[in-house]
Amino acid sequence: MSDYEYARLLPSHQVDATTGMPVVRFHPAWLFWGYLLLLATIEAITALTDLRIGLVLHVGLLFGLTLHSSLGATEAERRLALVLTMVPLIRTVSLALPLMDVPPAIWYPAVTVALLMAVAVVAAQSGLTARQIGLSTQQPTLHLMMISGGLSIGAIQFALVQPDLLNHTVVIAIPLPVLLLFLIGSGCIEEVIFRGLIQSAAQMVMGRQALVYGALVFAVLHIGYFSVPAVLFAFLLGLLFAYIVALSGSLLGVALLHSSINVVQILVVPLIVQPVTAFQNLLPGATPTETITTSIVLLILAGMTFIAGWVLLLLGYLAGRA
Image 1 (cartoon, rainbow, N blue to C red):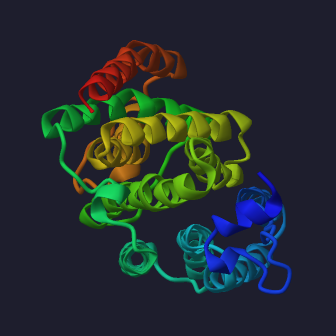
Image 2 (image 1 turned 180 degrees about the vertical axis):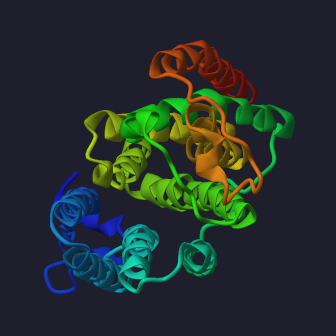
């Protein structure tokens, strides 16, 4: 088939009006991989230098993605640029509030409300349907059972992200209802953003690579932990979540699992490995207890990992039922 014959099969906006030849466009997927590299660079600069520098760079990335969402060549390209604005927006909010000396008790609800509003606006503007995002309740019982995986995965993530806390006292000066609301809410919101909006929009540009792309974006946001195992674990976890959503068509299970991981990592494991007195702000009147040694903690983690295998079995079952 000649170029002219091919051009006759294309919509008019893809054909040059002067020459009658197909318009050759830069493949948008490469541009979005470039955005990922830029995001990773900004996160590294933020972690190694100053929060203010990171804030400025994320605002710049947010502006660039917003501009791309208006001027992109195709609808799929514009949609993906739009949903990706959620990433620098998350970081902008999370970096700005500490610089403003906002108390944590106000900080966490403010972040949750801001993200909810942003998700609602971006979801509406992107044109993605609720089913495309994964807002369905297929096999609800099986998805609810995924919460059990939070016990082992949350404990492992604690050991990877906060190993220095195994032998030090932790103090959390945030009211328990506020902290629980944030941990549960943030887990659900992040899954809507990464596995719902970004993964769905990326599939229209990258195909199957979208699952890896979304997992990498999720992992990049963990660079600030200064732990290669933590970033790698976040990538593998994001990839597992991506396949669960792609095969089951629902965000319910991974959203609940993500929330349970947050609760276990931030609340449950510290309560096990630290003196209860460290949590007197959360549990008024609690009495001191002995700190469990690191070796016992590691033994507990090893014994709990079988639950992660249960999650993988659920994934296989969901895939067969999808």
